[in-house]
Image (cartoon, rainbow, N blue to C red; front, side, top):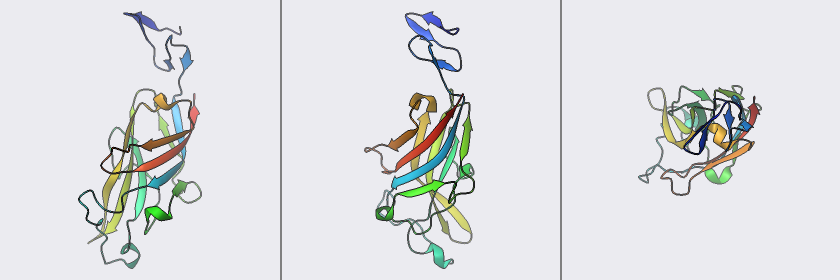
Length: 172
């Protein structure tokens, strides 16, 4: 259906269509309205604390977390939320949305063919602000999650133990 081709008993669908017979229209864009950080490691994988710095008093107690959304790879230069200072997993979940993060919502275009990297970063101050990736997920084609509007990103076997949920809206 919809311009698909049958090759060895499997339909190869044109861009924007999916399903067993190319019968399902897939979204072109996704709007991430909210990112919920449910859990994250209080220490680095080697057991040491995240670098905290001491030059800025408000950055000296616990990890300072923010989330980024980017195409294919983790990058702190991508779409980013505001920073939640002195975050402790037990005090969560930590919500990032338009109410507390002015850069949200994020719109991801062409979701039918790209990977989306959602990373959790720690911001600290040592001779200037720096960021360190705490962990995250690279989601292969977000449309694999369609039609869900609440997508949990969690892998109990992950070294980093990042647990996030994204709330999305699909646009055709």
